[in-house]
Length: 326
Image (cartoon, rainbow, N blue to C red; front, side, top):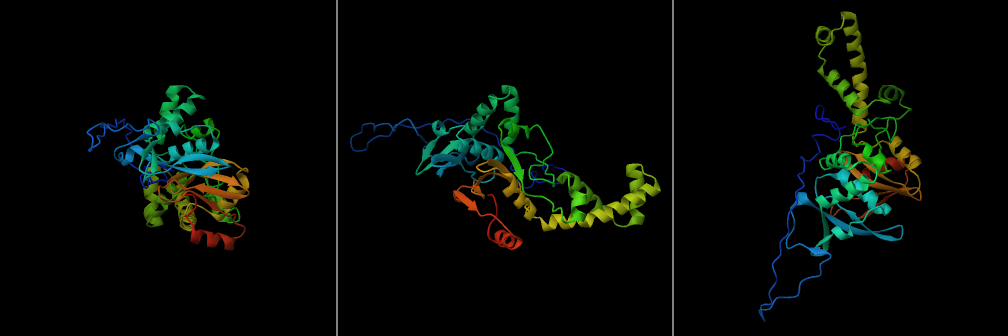
């Protein structure tokens, strides 16, 4: 789901421009006591203080929360940014696999961490599993988003890419909730085990057809088909198109009832995972049959609990009241 060709789910829409993570030096001057003319004592070296807000694309706010009776830090997304990187780092933080304390800076009542330090933390964790050159190449892709191509038959089904290997290397799952209902036989037979990119290609064909008479010679020329094969192809396109259109319209939230049920059933108790939906990656946690999601957006709250959904009435109320996972 990312492609630039058909505006796939993690693509030009919702994806920030490539973020250039640069190292900047924060300079401070020695404060002078105006009454005595003497230098004031220097602040303690840790946590570090910034004289002014760093640029938005270079830092992320950090919050504290209680998680499984532990005080832990987690990283917030300021606006648009490399949310796959943050979601992965937050899983590592909540697991206790990494710490960001030594990288924290203070500004007023808030803490922040530079983006370059988040990259370094994930790189160092990955370096325990693979060669450093491979790590750098993989993590750099997370700074500008992550190309994922959802497949509609299962919450863990994605077209496999090198970037997706990051999750395997870190022993964490990437999941989604955009699952087609097996009881909808027409949609399921068409969409199950197909990817978002594949059905968008078919949808483009469908919307390109004006009439069968006009489309047959075009397909014969463009795809080197016989007249009979081109006619069959037009029939296939015109029969599949409305089914795809209806599915995408009905699941515009990229979260289906069946998908949510699978999330509750397939995630293990106390499992942390990265959840993909609507061009966004966030951290989810299953505890006591609830799915808890970490809101990455600064000012958007801390930890929120999503109660289990048992029936379609609950599901409709749920959709009206919340936007799941960030």
